[in-house]
Length: 267
Image (cartoon, rainbow, N blue to C red):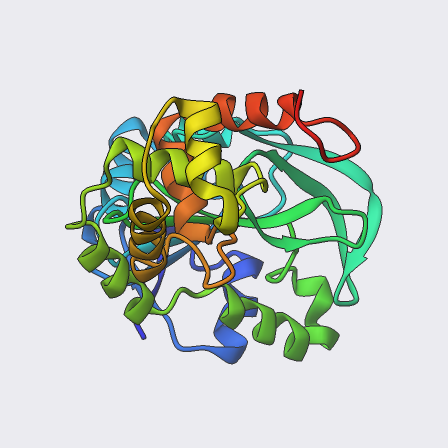
């Protein structure tokens, strides 16, 4: 496992904490190799324009993961990392996640990786597309040296943040599968949590004016399951939600949710 830290900032306490329980490689931004780079948010603010460009080019490459740790202090992480997602980090009432104190949360329409008991998001994975690298943001202070007494918890959670490359390889293979418009309609219905396999042909006709037989519609549904964009239960997967977000279909999802009455019937 190639875990890298930024060479000019190796004396920071966050990196000292990390070195307590994992081996790291020290590299300059423009020397990063394939793998994982851990960077406290405050360091991103200190990078030069050239370094930022190098970092943003690096994390977009398949197989790479940029893990950004708090505090964020309401920095514009979207602009700095050129994220194509509606997201901001804001202060929140002091709470805890696995016994670790949390004072910031992530406001976004992206699927969460970790959440507090009240539903506030404290970690996400962001892929620009199914063949890109990943930015992982967390507001849980895993590298806070003041939490040295809880380093076992911090280490466990840090390892949970790391993405298994086997999963990445499978998503790259799936990128070769080209979705038709009807595939996308089915994903939109699933994202809106209204997809009913037994009524799928009727739903496609009502919402999208697509007239397919039950067998034809179910075949397309099964293809989405095979591509891991839907679960066997027909619930949408993280990869499916990522596709919806990247294609800009969230507005359609919201509209379909509005069409449904509180009692579950349609307008």
